[in-house]
Length: 157
Length: 126
Image (cartoon, rainbow over all chains, first blue to last red; front, side, top):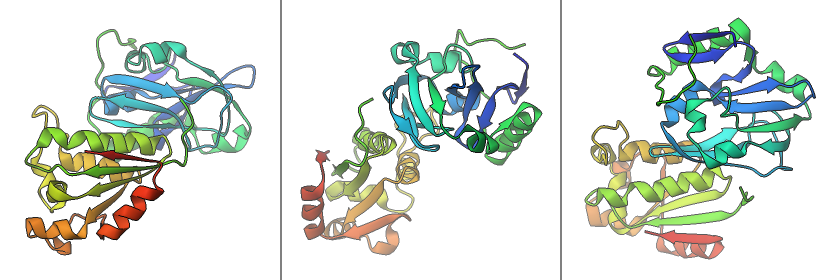
């Protein structure tokens, strides 16, 4: 995966990001999207203890919670980056929530959705070099610390 | 995750800065409920009131290696649209006036808390 590191935080270039919500989507060939949380998000949360996603079949509007994530110091929603129906939940994350920490862009995806208004939703997101620059600005503006990674995290050279 | 969107949760907090281990969890539960799209209110009364005094919550830190204080927890609650309310009568227990309260907290009387308890889908008492 083409990527860049900013302050130790990995940004994968072929994903689309909602930077303020620290989420990403991958566009799948069948018209669905895979949704996950970013390296910055897993750093802010710290080692995650529990993750519960909404049920398959739930229709969510962009910005509404699609999952709740808990760590020892933080609890909060993962906000949907698109409007659509949840069609698959990553059961591996439900069973091992720290997969979100170790593999935020690969095995630790949260769920898949069938978007209903992707064209409009994606217009608010950033990808490629624009995503890298948006994250660089976000990290600077929010004075975020360097990303931290627990043992077993995916490596990006 | 079951869909509990719109349910009303009332959290009553009676513990304050003198018992730090009893202060974080009610706020954590409140934020969790808010993240699950419930309407959440925390009602501070008795000793719970003293954590709302300006400058008090910053001094409560359960884990000295963490930068999270009780003020962080209160702010996290407010950031997640948890409503923070304090008992008017309990302010006098701590020689507090409305001007002593942190921003974002509203004052209600005893009658209001009874109404809110009856309107809530569930009350959690700490």
